[in-house]
Structures are given as C-alpha cells and as structure tokens.
Length: 617
Ligand code: F6R
Image (cartoon, rainbow, N blue to C red; front, side):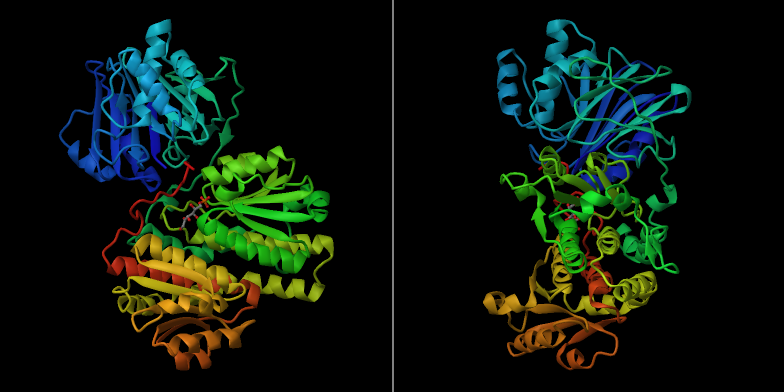
C-alpha cells in the first residue's frame, strides 16, 4: 500500500522516479506526487495530482523537471480522501523538508495536538504531514541534521512507516527509514548513485546490489559516499548487501491487454518454474532443502498452523487437506488478522506456515512474528524474494512464479498450491505416511499439470463469450466440495474484486443451510464439479439450484455427461487426480472474472479500493 521511489546520483531523477512509480502502481493508485530539487536554482519543487500516475505524468509534460535528487509516491488513502492536498510528498511548515510515507502513524492525533500547541499548522488530513512537521520540530528545537532529526522524531512515533525525507538545505542527502513497511536501497556502481523503493522492481535495471532495511533503521544516502545505516538509538548497523536479479521483461505486459491476463497465461511456465529442481519426475523424488534442514522438527510437529490472508488463505485451505491427508497431522488455517489478536495457543512443537505472495502483508507478518515469539518453527511460503515474511522465516520455500503485478492474484495462487503439494508430499515421504505407489502417481501427475493448464487456457475465447451473458448479474454464488471448495471461494473472490459483483463461495452442501434462499432465475451459480470425490453429491446440489430456476455454469472434467445435461454453460478441464483438481479448476474461474470485468469496462489490473501489497493492518 502506497509506493515510494527515491533517487540521488548523477542522472536526471525524474524519469527514474516516474517509471519507478509505474512499477509500483499496483500498491496504490488514488493519487501520486513527486519532489525534485532543481539543479539550476536548488529550489524544492513538488507536484501532486489526484488519480493515477499517468495523470501526474501528463500534468508535468511542459515543466522543467531537472534535478538529480528526488522522490515520488503513489498513494492508497488511509487518512484523508484521495485529493491533491492529501497526496504525497508533504512539506514541513517552513517548506524546508519534504516527506513521502507508506504506513500508518497510529498516534498521529496526539502528535498533531502537541505540534499545534507549538504553533504548527496543517494543510492536509494525513498522518504523514504530522510526521514531517515533527521532524522539522526536532530539527529546529535541537539544531539537528535531517537524519538525526528523523531518528528523534521516529522515537516518538507509534505505528508503521517507510519514509523518505529530503531537506532542501542539503540537496546532497536523502534520508529514509522503515518500520513494518518495506524499503529497499539499490546501490549504484562506486556509490555514485542510490535508489530507494518500496520493493526491488523500480531498482531492477539500475543495479543488482540491494539492501533491505530492517525495522527502526534510518539510512543516509549521499552521492559518492557509502550509505550509512543507524538504528533509532543512533548506533551503526551492519549493512547486508544482497544480489537481486529480476528479469525486467517479466515486468512488462508482453502483448497482453492486462497484467492479469498475462499472469493467467503464464501459469504453465510459472508452475514449471516452481517445480524446477524440486520435483525430479524420473527419479520420483521431491527435493526441498527447507525440509532437509529442519527434518526432525517438521517430522515431529504436533500441529501445523497456516496463517494467511485473501487468496493466500484459500491456498492454505487446500494445503490443509494435503498435509492432513498425506502427513497425518492436524492443520489449522487461520486468517492472520484474527490470529494475531486473539491470544492463540502456540506450542514450541507447532509449525507455523505463513503464505504470502508479497511477503509484506502486515497482518501475516505480525502473526508470524507472534509465532516466532512463541518459539514455533516459522515456515514461509512466499513469492517476493527478500520480502519481510521471507526474512522472518526460519525456513521456507519460494514459489518462484515471478513478479505478480495484477492486483488480483492468479499465478501466485497456483504457485502456492503447488508448493503446498510438494511440501506435504516430501514431508509425508520423510515421515513414512504415504505409500510409494501413491507418491509416484502424484509426482507423475504433478509433472504434467503445466500441459493440462495449457489445455484449459485454450478455452479462453469460449469463456469470454460465456462471460458476456453474466455481466448483468449483481450477485453470484460459487459452490465446490472437497478440494474444490477453496477453489469456489477463490473464484468468488476473483469476481468480486475486479468486477464489483457481489459473489460468495461456499461448500456446496452448505447451500441448503441458507444461500439457497437467494436462488432465482437471475442468480448465476458456478459449480466446480470435476469428476472426483463427492461428484454425485454435487450433482444433487446442481439439481437443487435447477429446481429453483437458477442459472448454472459448471467447471467439469472433460467428457462429463451428467452435469452437461443440467448446466446452461460448462467449461471442461482435463482429468486429473482429486488433490490436483484446484490447479486446473481455478483457471476458468480466473478467466471468467477477468472477462466479466473487461466486458463491464473496468480496470482489472487496478480495481477500485484495492492494493496489491497490504502493508497496513
Ligand atoms: C486477491 C488478493 C488478495 C491477497 C491478500 C494477501 O486476489 O490478491 O486477497 O491474496 O491481500 O496478499 P499476500 O499473498 O501478498 O500476503
């Protein structure tokens, strides 16, 4: 939530900042702004616009944007409506300091009152403006440099922040700090330039050398000088430079109309990447170093607790079935936001698995830290390499599906399910809770899943036509059972978040305990009815909807005849074994949501009110 980019070096900062904002726009897009210190007159120029980054860019077309130091921000509103006044950067009272911020200052009201008592006034409704005034207050009161004033101010702050601060009296310095919100520094050759950003995407292309700041660290960046990092107590902190390689091509749309469609179509490759080097089909082996390194703890775990949010939570529900079925150990799947606040029982012989695409979801991170404090083994299933959840993990597995830019998660979900399948199978093998025949059968089937996903994707045009007949709907129901029940929930989530149609996913048998009251001739009901366990039972559920004139769309196994007779539309997926059905049956639901939203003329990659990386709780 909210994207930050900063630059200090020898190049024109503006193109780097504006292109960086475009790469970060998935984090928020209700307003955007940029601050530059002009090389000509050392003036601090701030430009802000309500709306997307493109609006800001267009408004700056005829401006002099020179300057080799600057910072920029794309916002997801927390305090104060989206407007150019509330957009970042914010200026201090004297106009000397400027700040961009991602996060929430929880005690901003009391700080604001304190500063108002000292004569400070405020133009915006944001917590961020309070912070920049506080830094200025520290600077003026104690005659401090901006880095030290920032440290003083942050000691008074309760909440989450990633900030970059510029001081127009010091156009050779950029100061940044983080707590609970991510910030990455890119180091140019010979320290000639530095980039700073909410994630590595805006930095990739300039340098591979990156430093992920830790909580309560403040970094001072100066041209041609090594970066210096101190904690809030003013102590020097060791700098851990990581090599981060990101394929820039993967950050473009690659000929697709939207990132979401590209990412849906990337799934065969993404899933293969996820299995590469881990699933050795010919040897019938799964090799996961995360398991080898913590073998005893994992084998002896009395319970697994999966914590996640949104789509990742849905993947967790499938993971629960894998781990319980193959490893014979109980699994709880928890919403991270609830888990962290309800004093959960966590034992030292529990294994807590955090699932997160971004690795920055505030609730997941906090729940994970809670598990760590209780000495549980913390196991991360993360896509974004080097992210906060990955760094908090004792061990874990990257999904390796590549950057996901579309706000609606697609390939990250199938990657998470794949990792959970690999993990549960490898652990079951280590525990001796799976027979060799079953083990080999699943490995063989996993290895051909990417080809089967390709077959599902071939139906894109047909799904597009089907989608046109459902754009009128105000409500949708999604039903599934067994492994397909979380898929139904995921299908409903995809539809609601990008098409703004209200949709609910249910275990199909629950229908008669309430949701069936909603069924009438207007109500589309999507059944995920592949040919597996409970197939005959789900047919009865379909009959129940038909009896009430509901419109039935069903995802079925190729060659299905029974559901075909009942459903108005069917979408076929290739046959597979029940546990792997979600990897195929979710694809038509992703495409359906996508096409309904496109038909409705909506912005699928940046749906209203949402952000890709939810770094506030
Ligand atoms: C839905 C979606 C969200 C995320 C959720 C968790 O399409 O993207 O529901 O799944 O915000 O995000 P991560 O996985 O980054 O922790």
